[in-house]
Image (cartoon, rainbow, N blue to C red):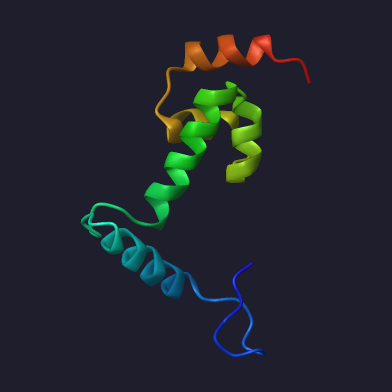
Length: 90
């Protein structure tokens, strides 16, 4: 996804990515200790869920094998998740 510095070096490491995120956060005037790669992942997943209500899609995007893990990850109520999931035909 992100090529490394050298043409043959492969993708950047997770540490290099974390440093980039930290620099991006600081460049817009935010505290880099409050935002990181994981908070971006969680925020994106939560936004997709709120916009679509599609818990299964979020589960697939996050790579979770159990829907319960996705429910916990998003900090949503199980009853709310089940109600929304029942409205979605697959």
